[in-house]
Image (cartoon, rainbow, N blue to C red; front, side, top):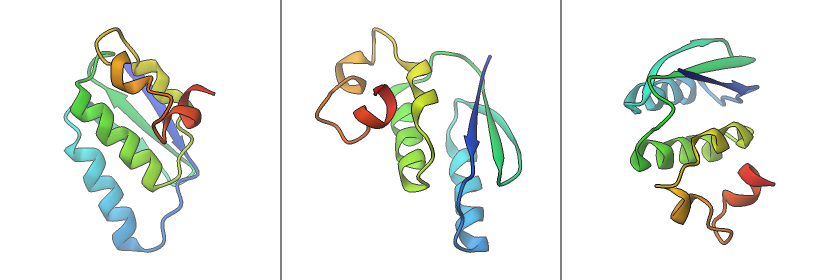
Amino acid sequence: MIEIRASKVLFYSQIDEDNFLTWIKSIASIKESYGDVEDIILVFKDPFIPDFDLRELVSLYSRYDICMKDLKLFLNDENSHWFLDKKMYWFSRIFN
């Protein structure tokens, strides 16, 4: 089981926060989430997550300007062809 921390998530309204939490719940690889605005912990069912879920995490982290470094934990041989693409907007935020 893998846990990652989303720290200091900035919400602009209650609906914004609700949308964030709804988005988390829609990602099938996430078993549970808990915490508060300072630290939201995401618990994953498995260290291998499907490409669709990883893309959703990248989008979620980008949208809410969350530090993306922990997402490199999900790099594997099967997703490296797109996840390690240096031309993509997320590459430097995750791998540098």
